[in-house]
Length: 338
Ligand code: NAD
Ligand code: TYD
Image 1: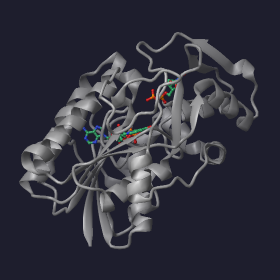
Image 2: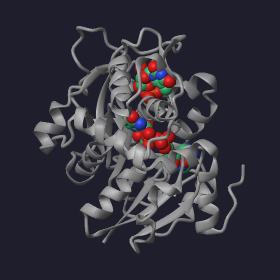
Image 3: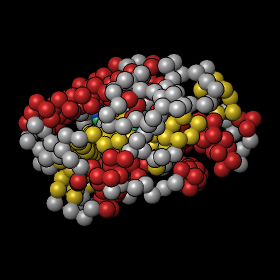
Image 4: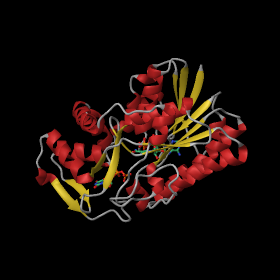
């Protein structure tokens, strides 16, 4: 049985990945290593956390001693990061510490232990921004990050690349477009708009609302990450996309329809500084080399996601109130020190 160290497994994508891999692959076990920042929520793993193949360890990827204290592991899937662009504009410090120093600390740990595959989960945002007619980002597109978040992820990508070239480490990098789906922290566009619409609050649309993102359901992203873990070519970068480019205002209007609310809730607000205009992904490589396909269309996936936030209203209400922080204490008898 392979033991996978999943960093950031209490976050949005990491928790979906743990659910996916434990259900889809019989002969793996998982160590979820997560610092439980504001974005880490162990409630995301309720149900799977009783699986004997699952273990949680609270720790920081920038903490060498905490990593050294881990028992045996075979492979790493690295999700842990500071992930929100607006927070990086406010203060980039935590982004440098976790995304850059943390990734290097994790690479050093993997090298000392001569571990197997190291899958680095990155983002299309490292490529920068596109005009309306530009071709989509391919793996050969130059890195040109525009936000402190994207710059910190680009730095981590380059450190992962260097670990392969210098030390021959068995690394793989994925660069995915915008995810949506269950358990996404309600600070990102889709869950924020759903929760606000459900509460009858204003929906803040940045700028003219015409910025374009390529949306992919988180379960499709998780399947892509595990495909790369199992079959990807060492040292390679794989773009992952949903082939669903939408302007933000189109997404917001659809959410209003799905929640039964009117356009009067829309508020155009001051634009995000340095706001990337458009992301689009050329994902031909993962599709042709590894046979990847998405299973969720954006329309059906968004409707199912709105339904999930309606059914699981208690989940995001506990996030918004801060009550979700108590779960760790109840489950593991410790206090979140902060
Ligand atoms: P998230 O913010 O929901 O979760 C991040 C997790 O990492 C949290 O559980 C947090 O507690 C943990 N963490 C943060 N700092 C840590 C540290 N120093 N040590 C250990 N754990 C730490 O993020 P997400 O949206 O799930 O994104 C996961 C990864 O996927 C990130 O690397 C992100 O860059 C990448 N990504 C995200 C998207 C997206 O649309 N959300 C798209 C492409 C790539
Ligand atoms: P976000 O979910 O923060 O992801 P990213 O910036 O990493 O793509 O934002 C998605 C898009 O939605 C982006 O163009 C910014 C915009 N946006 C708003 O218009 N209003 C909001 O309140 C938020 C959070 C985002």
